[in-house]
Length: 288
Ligand SMILES: Nc1ncnc2c1ncn2[C@@H]1O[C@H](COP(=O)(O)OP(=O)(O)OP(=O)(O)O)[C@@H](O)[C@H]1O
Image (cartoon, rainbow, N blue to C red; front, side, top):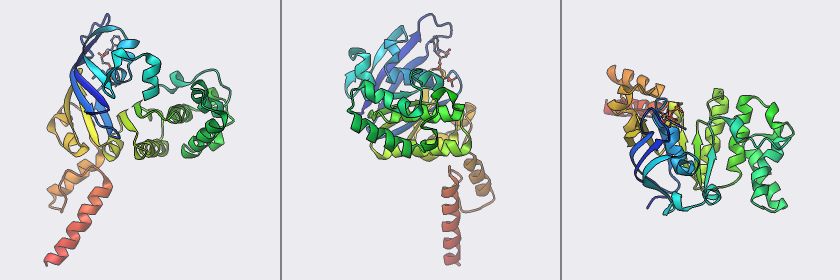
């Protein structure tokens, strides 16, 4: 059984004029899996995250059928603090994430651990390790509200990662970041995956989704309409038909394939393309 199990989940926000936000959702996420949720604005991605992190139905009221289980336990039967120990969540807007009570980035990172009663020595060790991992050394003495949007986004993510929950739900962590900072964030998230943490990510940057995810879930109009490996989902005609942006290397792959070059036309990363071109060149030479 998965660490997150969703059975026949349908949810309509109280007072909604647009109908249900989630319809017939069935999903099993394995421990240590990296799952990305993609889809157009309003497709239901944040609502699905909210169901996994227990905001639905604990904070957002409405009509709910079906269930979400974390480690076999229905979220409706767990208190919010219990859930928060299992699931770490990073909001779309880093401003929402900041405690608003600390005056330095260092204290911001330590805040959640202090609340959990983590002993001072261990707290220091964990915060120092996170500062290092998230490359936050130059910012530790700065006031959290005097950072740029991108810097805040990095601090917001680090302040959750430092807590060490086994499941992370991360909603658009790079929306305000430049390419280099986006790469840094994905490196950080991959680092968490290497530690066996389960990751559920909402992200619009498809090159990164393609490169890092074990599984991609495509949502449209409150439903899951396709799921599979990145190669399966991005090469599924429904994905393009729904107006989802595809990873750029896929267009290059298709163009090369059309010109008879030795690629499959399904490659999602430049590395994959280069590898196939090289292998094709070697095989071609050997064949002569
Ligand atoms: N608090 C709420 N009350 C009423 N309806 C809501 C609420 N939150 C979301 N919805 C509705 O649920 C549907 C799905 O919204 P959701 O935010 O889950 O989509 P999304 O895919 O995350 O979109 P985006 O990419 O814009 O963040 C939309 O029709 C939205 O209007």
